[in-house]
Amino acid sequence: MARRPSRKQARRDALFVLYQHEVRGERVERLFDELREREGYAPDGFTVGCVRGVLADTGRLDATIAGFSRDWAVERLAPLERSVLRLAVFEIDAAVTPPEVAVDEAVRLTRRYSTDTAGSLVNGILGAYVRERAGQSAAGGTAPSEGGAAAVREAAGDGVPAGEPGDDGRGAGGDR
Image (cartoon, rainbow, N blue to C red; front, side, top):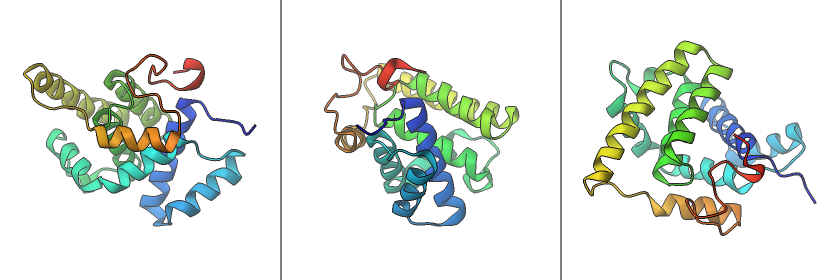
């Protein structure tokens, strides 16, 4: 049986593919092949579903990010920060990852592959987004995007709906 990456690794893989797509302009299939060669395992369904979901909805994700990034146009953000923000907002909106986990992982990845200052920027943008979203949800407003969650579940082939028993948002082994 082929090695399956942890959810943390799958998220990092998705970020790397999104970043490489942004800076190199390569086809996603080629980037998935490169990932397979480099890491020794095929990208899992979470990685594939998140990458495809982000790329299919980049315009809306960028508009959401722009609404919460004071004094920073989305185009001015570095490609890594832009990619990590898109990924986190997608995960939150698709309800495939609890908001707190998505924010924590986005900040961790940004600090690891960029700077602490960039991590603070990502934390501020996502924190404001999650707070507003929670306020709207409590008032009966915004509902999670079931289409995004369904796409990730279908790509993963696990059939476990996000937020139900067996899906703690952290992947196999519960690592975080």
